Length: 270
Image 1 (cartoon, one colour):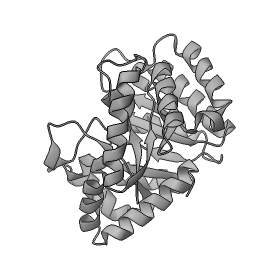
Image 2: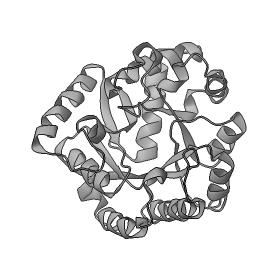
Image 3: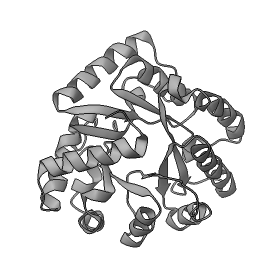
């Protein structure tokens, strides 16, 4: 069995960001889930990026037993009104069992695009961390061109029971070791297969499968063999096979270990 720990089915099935899922969209989501199950991807963490997408994520999770939700605000979606939206997200977390919420995020820091506001992103990230701690939920961390600031934000909570995943890991081995030593796992997806991504491959070999979870980030970042196409949860086994060869281990070991890691991290039913 495999688990896709980071997917955006709500984005795959509709045309525009921050719009609510329609009944027509739901028909598309059923096919995606069935295709994943055929490839032994039995559970999917559907990750939110805004208030509207948090509600969409919950909607999918409640409708399908294979889906589990996260709620949160992506740093690139962190507007000047983020606190108002975050207050609504906090209300959703108050009913985390009913809403099948198993994580907070994706949240974090992203200094890649122009016109970002550092303090706003840092304030929002801290609020997400505190919410995860308050409700004993895994934190889904997005970091891009912001490695040092991300570590500084996490360092403030190093003596807490905070746990989580560094999504779409793209940092150094030193970053990876810090994360692992502070109850974080590395989210590894299709980017590990990209020809120029030698640094990530060296990190994965160094930390081994005991410290990673599998993810697609679908519809984004498909494996190299599918570049240019929309990514889907059903592609998790392709990533797992690549990692098995990279780490000189069996596909069964990758499946078993990463699944156990995901179940423990996100407190999923076995």
